[in-house]
Image (cartoon, rainbow, N blue to C red):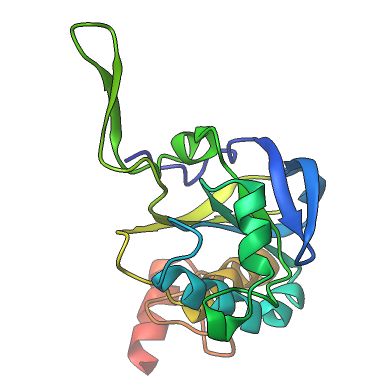
Length: 209
């Protein structure tokens, strides 16, 4: 598994569904320079854990936007599949009401470049391509800063849903660091004391906690 933290986020251009139903071509990350981005991958449309995550991000969408964060979801499904799922009501298994972009990684290059693609491709002795496992995305999540650099990544196995509150906490920690120059200790949340990155700063923090 590649570690992208500290590196520029891999670029992409792909079809996506935005605003809950509009299909656009050539959707890119570059349009969000100057903003933070939470880019998260999910395995499949029309499944079970995935809609719980998609709705959880939607419920907190204003919390992200108030922090200058754009939320973008990616799966290896087509944009038509995304669109169809978005037209279905929640009580029928759909995700109607999701408004942030759903990117269609149909050629699997985005998942590959972010190193979250499950399954393996190989060739047999006859030169035929074979695949082991489904070529779908693990539950990867990446926090990209205003310059386009990856500052945090998390990858869960397919059955394990993520914590949206933790994603917000990580955004808060990065923004606190940028604003005050203070590092954020274990279990830090916005409004709590952080500390100076010095021996004295650590000692002072530990003496109080």
